[in-house]
Image (cartoon, rainbow, N blue to C red; front, side, top):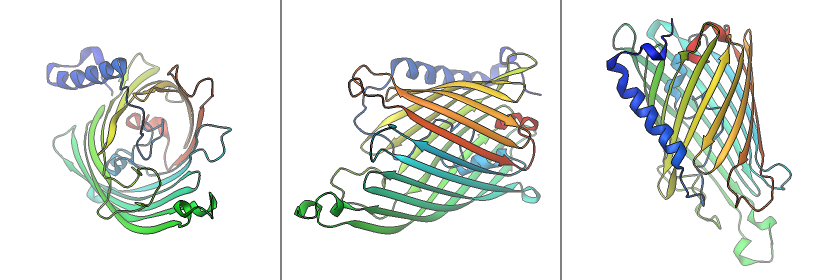
Length: 314
């Protein structure tokens, strides 16, 4: 049974301090918006595996998850992202294995990445587990600069490359909260260095995450979650989310990013199926003037077991 947050004992106060700092960061914000992390999506609280494969151990039934994200609707060449993950638990050794595939397209540039991962849990006591994961795969990058202006020497040569990728993650979790750190994209060699702009997609990206879930009453649960993203040369970005779940079926929440983006989130769990929708919009008055830079995000998942039967995944 998930405890009421009002009854948390003193040994759990450090977690509340951490969450308080996250909320403070949400209020103060981060004014640096010139660059963004290479890959992000607003529904990370429902599927953190692409950022930290150790999260897959929370799913004791296994699942297949898909997501499509389209930014700046109505603008040609605007970013489009497709993601699919699948995980299979290996209960005999308290482990899981799976695959992560995503495709990210921005104008003439396209990145495709495929990784397999293995995660193992170590039981620390009756209620807490330390999970570790390792992932490996390939990353392909293509930039068709010649399509911009074939007569201009600056854009004469296209850029193509395929490089190996590896990463790791660590997560500590109990039956009602988790804390994690990961580097899912550990770049050893350069890729796409001929890009006209300073490409941040191929630097090492570090992620710090945390969430808890608690009972508001018998029918409603509340899940605040945070995700901090950092890469060298890119400002630290924080995602702060809060979502209410009604009877384990309907979820309503908000997400705020410190690059002045906000999202409304709607989720629906029906037996083994999960459907999610996120609508993201800018909150800055200087957001490209009056341009509507709305982002739509849709997720669809199938779990080999009922979603409501496992509150850690809500």
